[in-house]
Length: 460
Image (cartoon, helix red, strand yellow):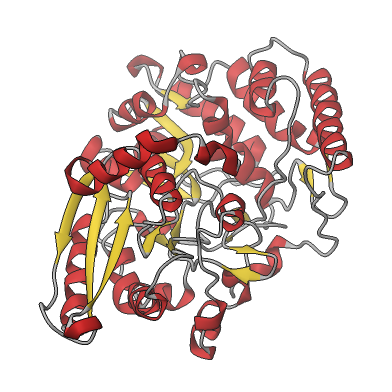
């Protein structure tokens, strides 16, 4: 994304923004005093935009509390954007009418928002207490909530990845615990399939309709738990060879016919539906699953959650990863009421808000003080997704790459369409060529972290 695209939006989008703010863009809630400590005796008015619906009930309650606490001084008007959140936000930014606080969990990138001066660095507001509570590991996550040493957002919740399994199908196959190694993953899938043959049960499932989604849920978590990655952070180059043993194991499950048929075009919701019906022994997925099996696909299946296996079954040498955990809310760089906007941010990031946020299953908290105070979440198995052997990894370098993305190539090797060694050789060449060419052209800077050690970030 670049700023030229915003200019081209033109008058039509500016008008659309005005219409959106008036009615059609979402739901608004408003509370506060009619008089107080702002200009002319009126309270300072702040605008809060979010694209999140899942936490609407809790956020309304907490914003009402804030308005009551600061009655006569600050009044917050919140808006849930039902559609086109990013488009409306871009338009508002260009028109100098951006909300004072807005949700950071979206497609617009931190780097682009910083270039536009659309978001405010928070460093001047970070008291010693705030710094101590979060720590540099959470406040300085490069290109996620921090850029060039400045912090633009604080963490709340992120996505974690686990193995989800059917305890009853495991017991029927004579298995007492989830697999700890890749060899056990292959073996258990086969045993569950054999034990459940009469009921059309399969030991494993993979949502391969979208390879990027499938491998984000399982392949990358396993690789990273072993302390590896297809990008060599210490040397600043790609090395897809590290994926080889994990891909070979997945292909073996396919070759053993231990995988739910139709996996080649299977999407995640049909997969979940089959798991809820008791037809799948195990699969990899994310921390949304407790909510899915509570409301979307209610199930009586006795299901459990476990950390993904390591290659050899030994203790992790690295850490599984938390996606999107570094940022939650931004302050507008153009806000006319930054002091009051920080009061709102400071309130929303307090344990009084973040603890119930986690307890009610709104998101997996990454904040140690929250996890230390929170009661067990009410959603079944939600606590099993809480960070244990999980940390926030760096963001991958962004640059042009010719040809197919790596996930599609790996998918083809599992389907038997491309030899694995050939696919890895192709990926290493294309991705490193793309990195080298973009760096030479001055379009990006190679990321090298010589002391990178994800395991050192785990809070003991």
